[in-house]
Image (cartoon, rainbow, N blue to C red; front, top):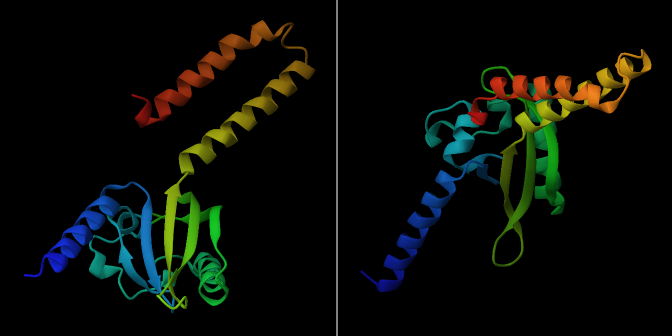
Length: 177
């Protein structure tokens, strides 16, 4: 076997191993916005067990029409005009029907002549961060209302309540243990 071919196969295997251990959703789509590569995390996000179940399919196969249509419009902006989408916050429905949030990047995939032949996508699950942000904003609102009602004389009076809220949040978060 030619040493160059052997090196390429080794590099391809190494690259595949790398993308499969990353927690982010990594995928490649062809010019018609169909999956041609999906890493392990993306497969889990799609609710399938094997890459074969995802390949050749578009987002309409995995997401409700409204969400799939939004994803498709983004794909077409990348595929048709070469527009990159970087770190866009997106809401979607997960495989079990739960509301999820992602930070999404989509970049054009070009051949040697510069023509767009597909796109490379990376998504990161930020659902927990969005939930924490909403909880913090709700707490700020509650504190403001309580202060207006005269329930606190000083900021020091808030500390036990804040401590309890943080402890409760840790109990709800399995990664905190």
